Image (cartoon, rainbow, N blue to C red; front, top):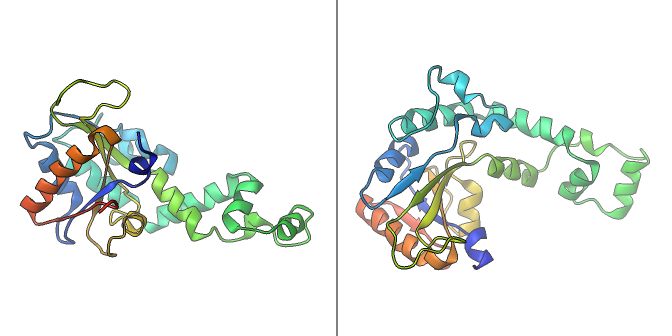
Length: 220
């Protein structure tokens, strides 16, 4: 497997007028997708987002409920909730973690430790820390394309994931890392292991061309 494939997913970028919560169920219902597995309702509990409480009576996520679930999740993951998550996490992480994100030199780090300077806990969390909190809170859907050739258990070539980040549906960091233009349209990250990457790319490229959307592959 190639680590680059894992670190640099393919991006499927939707126009601003196409809500990702309405587009995804239709895409996943396509006959080209063989199996789909959804995350549980409590997937973002760690972010302080109580999706189950917001959708009383709903016990799980499926294709029929996906639009409502994802739309509700994006609504709950607003800027206020992100700020709350960042503030709480920043206060709880180890001192060395805050020093890492603040990129403190040895002198500044010692000054903080011996209380000769402002505490890192009292400093504002930098953008890199915020981006990592967004990345931790992805809504990841597993899918499979029809089998093609021998099945490999360690990294099935037909296995892939689609990820949307409810705190940032437009995927600002994903766009930047992929070399895509900034924009307001939703960005869906597509990951497949190296042995099946080209096949998944071709499949989603066909979807993008059919829909008039944009596919961005960091590998060109």
